[in-house]
Image (cartoon, rainbow, N blue to C red):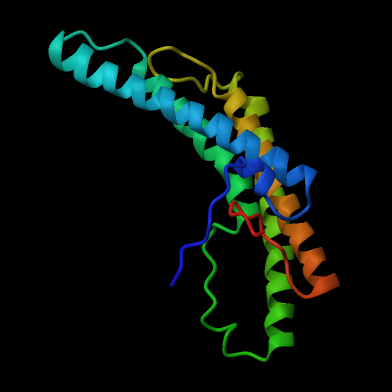
Length: 185
């Protein structure tokens, strides 16, 4: 068994699928996700190991920042994971069904999922519009959750759009192409 050769091209250029959207989504996810993860790691190490354990003076609000960075990291990974096909799908039953029936059920599941995710995006946007009025803020720094609700709403909206687009692609061609980070040349 031979190992596939890897290319020195960035992952965003190797993304298969709908081209510009996939490249844009991959760049956003990898750059912002990597940056947020790096900042979270550094903040956690500095706050817990150095400031708290060695100096007994933790950074005020570091936990608030870590929570908000984690929300950002998860939010940005939602549409990327949807496009890359990284979310869990249970295919035990669909493997036992005739192919056309399995395809039909998969299309219905994607459409229902898209509608449900669209409703979630709408509700997150609604929650964001009320967050400041109801005083939804972090505990120490009192940073409003409003922009994070909006970020989650946008990311869930993208996830819904990806589900609907995948269903449409499945109706037209019988399968949905997922984003690939491997060089297929």
